[in-house]
Image (cartoon, rainbow, N blue to C red; front, top):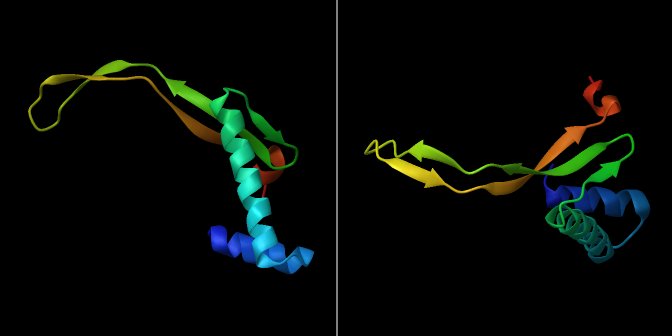
Length: 89
């Protein structure tokens, strides 16, 4: 399922127009993104938790030349599913 499919499914199940469902989906994603940028987590009961994880800076090697390079720290989003999601079959 991609974003378009998600919007269509929400529109069908709620009776919202596609444009309204699009605004809802965009608002949810924007809120989650903004919260993660602030370093906070988003917990949705029965679904899971979105967290911002920071990887420390480190030294690596250029695979083509073997020269050492500096890899800066970075933050990325991670998702931890709730137990109910893990047990789905």
